Image 1 (cartoon, one colour):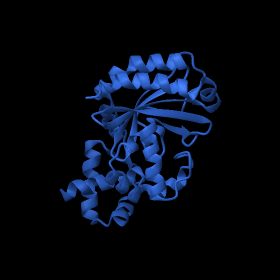
Image 2 (cartoon, rainbow, N blue to C red):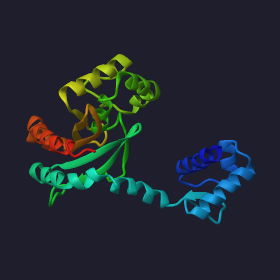
Image 3 (cartoon, one colour):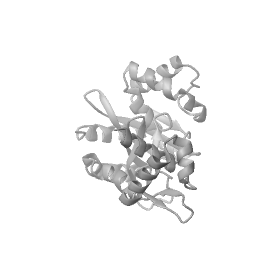
Image 4 (cartoon, one colour):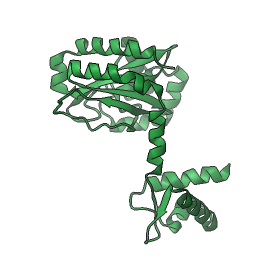
Length: 250
């Protein structure tokens, strides 16, 4: 089992280094013997997950992308949600996003944009976001148990320094954090007021099944257009779609 952990350690550290890593750099970073590191890198190259450049540095290949997308394509909810998401996008003129929890992140499974839209968000299928960073993530986080929320706060509260728009008020303490999540849970939606992309507002609601919400659906668009359409009217339409899709969650 140790060799498996070491292999993933290599993949993760190479992934964080766009300029590639030499064998010596890998040994220095991970403190593994050179013979062990060479064996792992050779195996990963043979399997197609790493490539070695003429400089001797190792780089990730796109094979991991293929594996990642297979997770998305195998999610039955994606295909079932498309017609509802498409209809909502065309009805409102905004982008509709379906996201799913992946440990301490949310992954964008599907994005539907209105026909003939001249505005496009930067989000794409497979994009991972912190639970603190997106409206969908905050909705999912609001369904954590108190213990889970406490554990999440302990390991991630420092990330809040990077996110100015977590809630309606600044989050400075764990009590603030729990209070904001309680409000999101009670009101049944979360808003990302330009915290992820400048000028973009996103509103998300949960896809709840048996008091669990591992999925969330959202609409996003230019902030002035969202306000012009009306947040409450938009929320009502979004919740209608969420109600239908919740029944399709396995």
